[in-house]
Amino acid sequence: MTDTTDSPRVLVRTEGALGRLTLNRPEAINALDIDMIRLLAEALDRWRSDSDVQIVLIDGEGERGMCAGGDVRALHAQITAGRADETAEFFRAEYALNAMIAEYPKPIVSIADGITMGGGIGLSGHAAIRIVTERSKLAMPETRIGFTPDVGGTWLLGRAPGRLGEYFGLTGGTMNGADAVLAGFADHVVPSDRLEALREALAYRADPTGPAEIVLLFDETPDPSTLPASREWIDEAFSAATVVEIVERLRRRDEPDAGATADLLESLGPTGLAVTLDAVREARGMSGLRAALEGEYRRVMWFVTQHPDLVEGIRAQLVDKDRNPQWDPRTLADLAPDAGAAARGFVPEHPLF
Image (cartoon, rainbow, N blue to C red):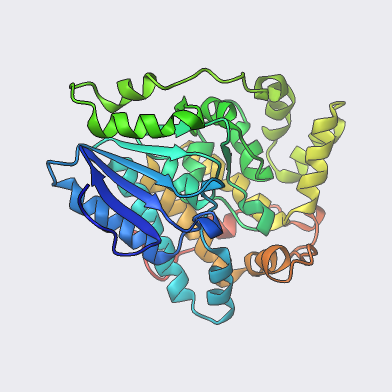
C-alpha cells in the first residue's frame, strides 16, 4: 500500500491497481465539507495521469452509510452569518467534483452502502459503475428542508422511468437497492458481506478483465422492487403541470399510499416543491450533466441569497428541531402560478464553470 491521507476525513491510498477514496467521518455519516471535497478532487487530479492507478473506488467508512450529504448545519451558519460567498464556493467545488466523476477518463466504482443521500448521490450516482447493497438507502431529501435537489440529482431524476423522477424529487422518498437500480441511480446490487472481496478483486485481479466484469462476479439479484406496483398512480398524478394539480390528482386516487403522499407534499415547503418540479422537468430535456448542474446552481444560489425557506427548513429540522417550519408562502394554495420561474432565471454572482 502506498500514499497516505492528508486528512483523517478522507482516506486516500492505492492498493494494487486501485486508487481508493474513503470518506472518513462516520460519526456524521460521512457528511461532506469543503475540505473533503477538495481532497477528493486533488486525488482524482493526481491519479488522472498515474499509470499505476487503473480503477478508482469511492466508498464510506462505518456501518451507517456512504454519505448522508453535505453539512447543512454549516450551510445554515454561513447563510445566517451573511457569508454567502463561502456557500457559493462550497457548491462550485462540489459540482465541479460531480462533473469530474462523471467525465473521469478511468473507471470510477462507487459503493453506496447504507445511507447515501444528497451530496452522497453526487459522489455515487455519476460514477461509471454504481454499486448498492441490501442495506442501501438512497434519496434526494432536499424538499424536507424546503430546498431543491442538486449535485446532478435532477439529471438522474429526469431520466428515471415514467414520473418516478418527479415522485422521488418532490417527496424526498427513500429507495432501497432494487429501487435504485430500477430508477437509474445504481447499476449492481452486491451483498454487503461480499464488499471486501470485491474491493480486493478490483485491486489485485491479475487478468485483463475490466471492472464491470469483475463486479458482475459479485452481483446478486435482489428481491424485486415494489415500485412497479405503484407506477400507475405515480405516473398519473406526477405528470400534472403543477404541484397543486399533483396533490389534487393524488386526492382522487383510492390507494392509501397516494393519500399519504398528498399529506406529505402538503407538509413540505411549497416553494421548494415548485422549484423542484421545474428543475426535474428542465433537466429531463438537457443534453448533459453539466447543463443540469448549472440549472441547479442557479436555483441553489437563489435559495441562498433570495428566499428564506432553506434557512427556515434547516432551522426547524436540524437546529432548533421544533419541526414547525414557517414556510413562505405557507401553503400550496398561496403559491404564485410561476413559482418555479424566478429560481430558474436567477443569475448568480459567480459562474459555476
